[in-house]
Image (tube, rainbow, N blue to C red; front, top):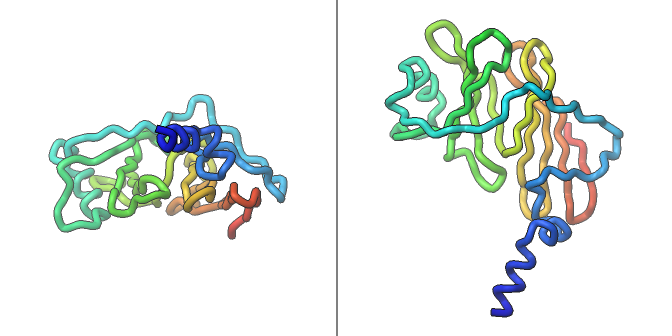
Length: 183
């Protein structure tokens, strides 16, 4: 019984963060370069994926997903999030690829409608995705992921005219209390 109580105590979010094992809340260490992160847009969509049967998706979207699907066997269902990233009135589609997911979070490929098909414009991995003011007419995307006990990444993606590129990447080591600004 004593072991169960100790395990429950160490797993609590407040204690876990003190030991560098939990940053689900998105608390970040002070930045050495003074960078100021953009504020999420108030009217931006909330990233809330839903699961849909693959065979019930529109033919064009199924074809787009098939092009990026890593397995020969297509899924029975797929986790999707749809929103208009570029303000053209057509939804881009984020779809989860579990084979590329892991302790860093779920990996999502991003597709944009193009004519009668879809084209990939990048991928994201993690959770806590937020949308920021548009750059090159597309929302910027902030995300976080985990890289092992006490190590978290915070990143910002911006559209370069063709696809999403990382424009900011920070490694937060909660064990050492240090931040690495990655190129």
